[in-house]
Length: 246
Image 1 (tube, rainbow, N blue to C red):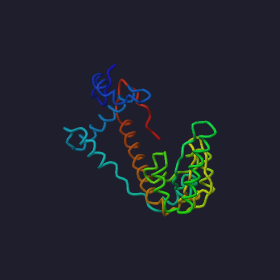
Image 2: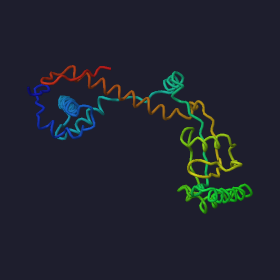
Image 3: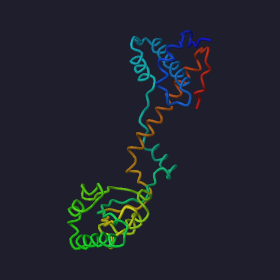
Image 4: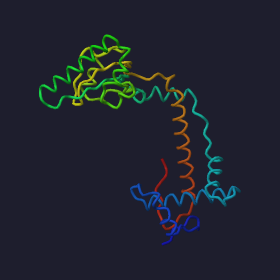
């Protein structure tokens, strides 16, 4: 049976032409048909309102600009959301650090001793003159970060191997680890530049992004309701559209 939307046919050729665009959907054919039905309904509505539909995409855009208007969510609503869902605004402990990496020896005791001895020599130099950390990282580190003075940027707990993480989060900001830190990658000299305790992000810090998010969600809800109303009022044959009611 042919699929029709208020008497206008959605042909098999139209479905086949669009289906590749929905290849990632659980059911590409269903996703394609649903999009074609909604597009046809929107074009019909645009035409009904006197909008030129020669360019279907432009007509749909003009229709939605007219029909889906959402005022920015006010600060009171943002505050209510922030207070209701504090878990969404919690940040974990994080740090900013740099390191100098020395690889482990070839596996025998002598080469391991030599590798560690070299690392300890550079550690002593860094502790005596911390301002040389970046230069020594560029000179000695075998990590790609060495080219940026050893900088690893900001990271949180769980992003580094345990031995490295433990050393960073037990060292004060502005300090260099007092001993070499050994991991599966080798010996590290670590400079901890910043430490940030986890906790609730302040409302002032998140307010602007929260307003954007809630306004977008309000727009999406209104769009969903608008499409649902078009489907409910239409005569669609040959295909059972799923309910769009939220």
